[in-house]
Length: 248
Image 1 (cartoon, rainbow, N blue to C red):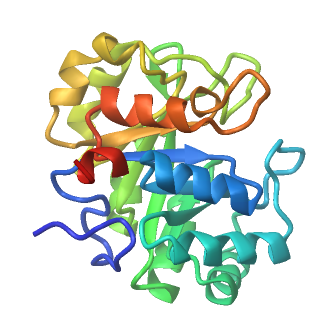
Image 2: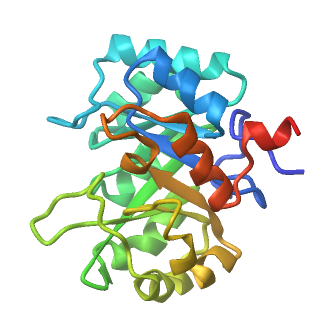
Image 3: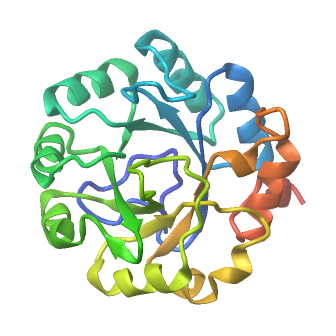
């Protein structure tokens, strides 16, 4: 039986639930965000720390409060989303805040993953792989990331001018498919995901390693606030489990 996102998962193995697809929503900054996402069907909530200039950057005190709020829902698993690369800093942060999932969103080398795996054996380690112009910038390091202890990859877009994260740029399905034979860990799909472009990824969503999606803008309304209808539409369209479906 697959563990729920909020439960502890075996280290160094498949991090996401083995069959159930999950919805990860990034950028929560307030308790109301946590409540909205939990009620609308999200499974994972990305909390930004160590992303200088990021629109959802959190100081440690607020990060700690939102981690506790997410755990209190009994549904949402908080995920640290960070550009930080010092293993000692990340280990201390995880222990102080109670974070169990860590997403390395920049170009941290495999040695960082290895050190985190040794220091945090029960953590779920997510490494972002950046695709640009049909190529994965970390492609030569994928095997090393896996051997170091990566549990889950997240496939996202890097723009030509170097921007990463929340770019709103959709990945072509063929670019994703060309990378998948290199992966032996499951993956989440990011990059301009919406309720409307699921049909653009028929072969990706059928892949046995596909574990769900990661979104930011598509979960918000026109004012930039998280929207329960938008989150529920994402969950239903991409065939993740939503709280509304579970109650019927």
